[in-house]
Length: 557
Image (cartoon, rainbow, N blue to C red; front, side, top):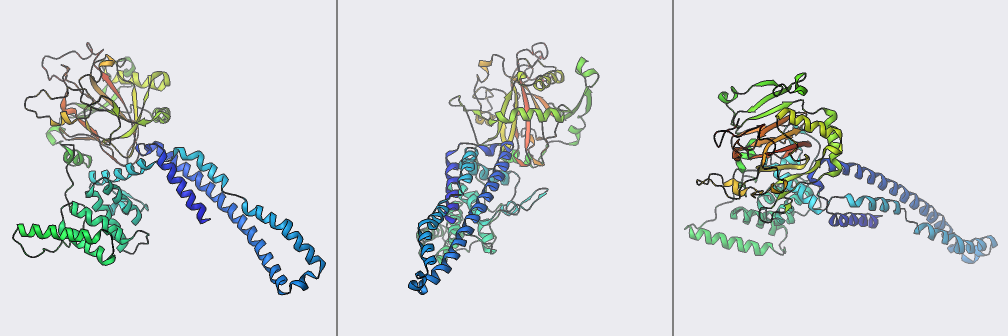
């Protein structure tokens, strides 16, 4: 039984390594795994029952035969003197032992293995596990959550019984360590050590945790603490392969540093426990990282009383559009400059569910264009799955497209298809522009460093479409999100939170056709919940009379 379960685990791991799924990028597709796992558990229970039944029958045979052999071996000749005993011995060895052999050779696992083989093509792979681990770290950074909060299932506004074990925290730390992400490796190895010291049962060796933790702390530049942790490791395991060498190296390096500073004594390591904020997170590719993440948390908003006084709500019939006369749209100002508006009751519940239903089988990992090669590729800064829907797919798509045209007053025949996206674990799309730009900012002051760093910088991104640049974005929110998932604009400090059935709209270009660089925006990581959106990117062609050029380069309306 134990050998079989070991084989099952091995088979599961093998199938995980050979499947390329990227399942973690979509909550919708991950829900299918819940039902897959339920079916496998049921199949496993059936196998266990069959195995128990088989073992019960074998045990019954063994008890009966043990009693017979005990009697027969006490006086073999006397036992065989009785002709019935002689006959039964011949019969047992010729027939009944063969039947027992057949019973032992029966394999109740075939049904379970067959069921698992059917489902294994849908299993997540190693990249999914790694992606999900990195998603937790991304949430940890964005929403400033310490490892203990995650470990105990304490998320903002959410309390659950979901716990991370010592093994879970250790594996999180190893994922970070293997990526040379020592900042997160320290946080998760420390949490693993903390739970182990609290007497949590685990098969993870304390020495293994200290090994990873001490080296990660060293990489963060904290030599005193690295020395102290390595000494603890040597005390536990004096024969550890690396500990002795690391300790001599750390102490030698520290002695050299003290000598350069004209100090003689080792300063004691900090007695404060390692936690979020103990070490500074390394900078990355995103210049506005701090502003972006603060907005995701609802901090640093640029809205003040003066600006708020300019915001209104109204009924919008778009110049007495016949389809809006009897039921005008409810329009709310979200921001004054650049102008961002929200429309209420844009999509009904039935429409959103139908759109999700259409999109789900077509969802594929969302891509971005590599600025160097021009090839569409996946990227860690965009974690979601998307699908493109045409009017021919279902009447609801045609209705939505017509509704967008009625609401905006813009031509949608030249717009891109309706894109539907579902965000996965920690799903996000870091700051980006929707419109295409020249690869270098023409502004001589170079005040838009982020322009060059944006991941879709290419002058002819939409040339093949022949419809011009993306003049505007219409974004439908198709689900409520319990926590996180805001749309933020770091340039001017706006945060717009998802509300199911509503939509937000803004212009990406000035009336001159020049890009409005203030519209650089991001989809914040989803902390709790499943975020569904659909968007329509409206292009320049067809808007010549609907939104004519202005008198200046930066005219907006």
